[in-house]
Structures are given as C-alpha cells and as structure tokens.
Length: 73
Image 1 (tube, rainbow, N blue to C red):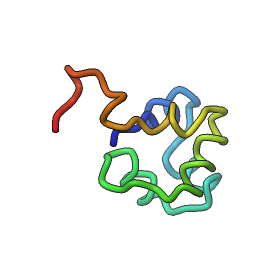
Image 2: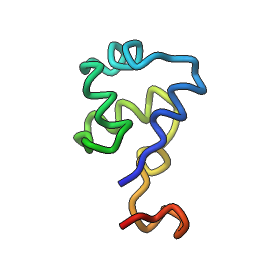
Image 3: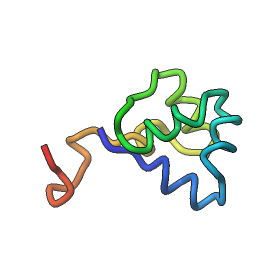
Image 4: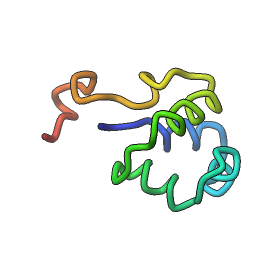
C-alpha cells in the first residue's frame, strides 16, 4: 500500500512532529507511515484523512489504484 501522507503534510507546510501531535501519535509513527513500513489502524487512517480534508481512499492507495509504472510488487 502506498500513501500520499508526506505529500499532503509538506503541501500544508507541516512538520512530522506537528502532524504527530495533531494525530495524537508519535513522530516515529508518522515516519513509519510515510515510508510505507507501517499501515495505520482504520481509526488513525480516518483521523489523518480528516486532518487533510480528504478521504481514506485518496490518502492510502491500494495496489489496484497505483499506476503500473509505479507498481513495484
């Protein structure tokens, strides 16, 4: 699963620490999500999507949504 969290966070001029505080998680959790090493719980995914005014589906992309040139599985 790929996500657009880093892109959204930087477009909002927000640091990882600031986002972590708003989402009530650790900065390490944000780092792990952005790098694709951790898939958040549905509750955290919902909270992150709401913080950026988007849907979970637009924030977290399943393999079927990733264009073939970006697909590395």
